Image (cartoon, rainbow, N blue to C red; front, side, top):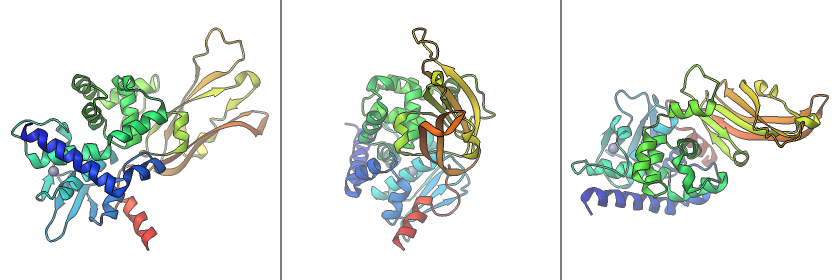
Length: 336
Ligand SMILES: [Zn+2]
């Protein structure tokens, strides 16, 4: 093995060891399906502060005591990757490090011979810490995805949203675990998230593509999804229109969402007229919020008799703001 390969292997093993020590797997299964890196730093008592850094995504300092800085100027998935990278520097007892954009341009688990080994280790640590193999398997089980589905950029993107990882880091991490091969990972990583979002949204064109686009499923009903204030949700629901039942899209606005598209699709020719159809609803969040996206199906003349409900719990606060992380503030409140 080359020095780079040894560094990658050691970092992946270290990330797994830390998860074992912290019992992360159990917490993630009970929790939101994400590795809560900010909460873990709080539990490890490593100070983490968010600041509007100039020219840096993050920093690891260790004199006189260890501490981590992460920028407020990037999306949550980048903040999470940066914090995990700095945690890697700390856990692997590295020298202090000032980390700029290059940590996003590098592909974790791939590095040239002359690469800085400390940075190779921190990148590999971060990617495998945020998306351990068991977490991929967990989301596959929940969503009914198979390995073959990971050749689809849309599925890889949906995994990245649920795991709270960046899309490109997810592509390379899937290759590390051999869910896809390297060539497939390279092809997937070249696809811009904006292109994936457009293909999910179809005819609806948002004013910008900053927000993420979630394809919600039945499996999402049991978890809290972590997103941003302008995220868009595509919901497909079976509707018993023939029996007079309709999904009440009017409920979206009071919950903080705007209806952006509404159609009925996939009514197969063999269906008898008036049989169930699939209603496709596109809803855009209108603010920073947490709570429920909730829809009920009822007959317009009997609104109090609800035939079925679709409810997902959402946390749409997006990027962390200046100061301590939300997880750390919760942790301190609980400890107090
Ligand atoms: Zn670094």
